[in-house]
Length: 149
Image 1: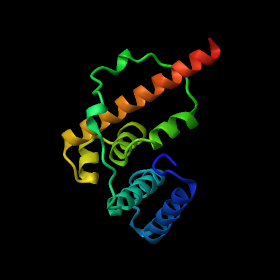
Image 2: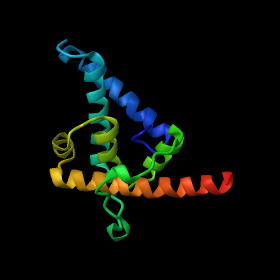
Image 3: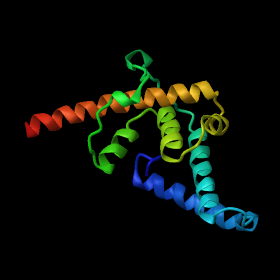
Image 4: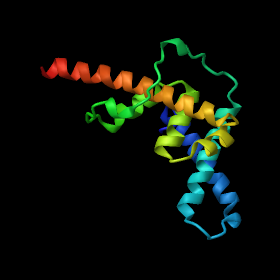
């Protein structure tokens, strides 16, 4: 669900991934964990799906401030559902890089290779995704304080 906006799409990609895993099971070398191998296939299936989509949404980058230091943000507890909802609202390019880097622990080089972008573009997309998420989390925090205050 962290890559897809709706459950049906996530289920379709999950099923497609399992079919690929089943068809390529003989290629598993038993040198690492099966879970890691299957996760890599699943993420590659998702990335392939996004690469096939020709409609990319325009991004108004003028409204996005770049975060230089993430330590300035005061951490507040938000539910996983809230965080995922905010991540889903990100433009696709930012969402993919954010998920791969933060949630799936890919390096910027791995992201660049997988998405056919430069390492600097990966870093920029991550920074912009974080800026958007920070801004939205601050709005939610203010709303929460108004309700509780």
